[in-house]
Length: 455
Ligand code: FCB
Image (cartoon, rainbow, N blue to C red; front, side):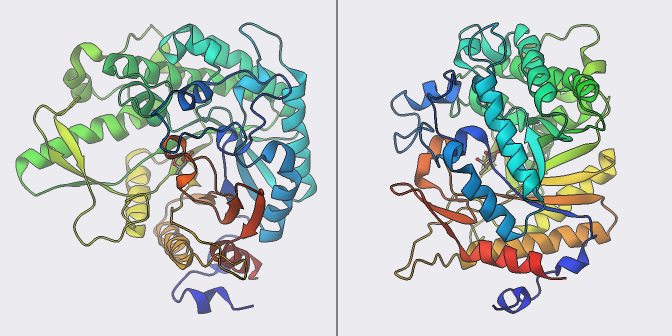
């Protein structure tokens, strides 16, 4: 086999990182599991959204997806053979609590219990995300995350999961990308539940953050030695020009995209300038909420894909600022996302200097390309391989500069249901043939394996 540095000149070596560094891949329940109607799983907001014509580009859903619910042993074998020592997955709330107010569904919990045992048997450390966007539809029918009671329901779900898995799972991520839950789902309407009201989105955001903060002590109570954090989707920002209007727009955008999350999580409350700008859309906050949200965590999860360029755009809701397409000539992925490994370094340096979380993990980073299976069965995704190698390089530099990054999870282990893009977008290091469910390690996956096999 070729050595990784022959395939990607300039890429870092495994030995450039600490011996106990975590090397993983990430997935989420709705995107891979399938088995949408099995073992008492309730409908999720994504089932409902996907069934609504026009919401998912290819009209597909997660009903079958990668059939991971049945094929997980094969997927975990692939993860082990790649050399991963950690795996990030998420728990489907609708599998665990089948009906409003019902007792935990043991069959749903059994699945995750088997999966966790399967990881441990293979020497893979489980990292469980408690909410990766699949809210039970019965809760959305009662107002979803905009309703304060959903925080309580979430805690009941978290309690059931951590009691059952806490003897084997130490690492817990309360939420994946609250910005997406709130803004994509409730303001832009491009994700489930498909609402388009800014005030609703900010109330959703507040309840998601509150549920995070309240879950932290609960998880610690149920799980001896628990390590708890949250994963945020973040972008380094670039003003479209040096002019004052674009710079001010970039500042406004940053208030909502970055500080709106990181400030309250670190005990600083919502940023006052942004609160003033959102005006009457500001969330209802009860006494004690901000203290709860600021619960001390063990790590910060960073999901990084691309930088954003921001322009002043009067009239553009909600803050008169607009995200521009990547600059002309920039390298992009099939999603149209700019490839900018240096952006990862910038972002990490900023978080470290603004908030200094004790530990950081890259809980997602990856790229989408239009992969093809060649006649010999291989998938020659050299662009993804390069994306991966270059981002590992940027991460190495950030660590050398003093940022305490302790692990990296590539998005994603397998191709999967890419939300509103359906199955048209492939992010996996493993290719899935959706007609046969055949798995094939792509060249990028082979490169990661070779990288991880280095001494
Ligand atoms: C992130 C999501 C993940 C996946 C990647 C491409 O925002 O957390 O589920 O869709 O983007």
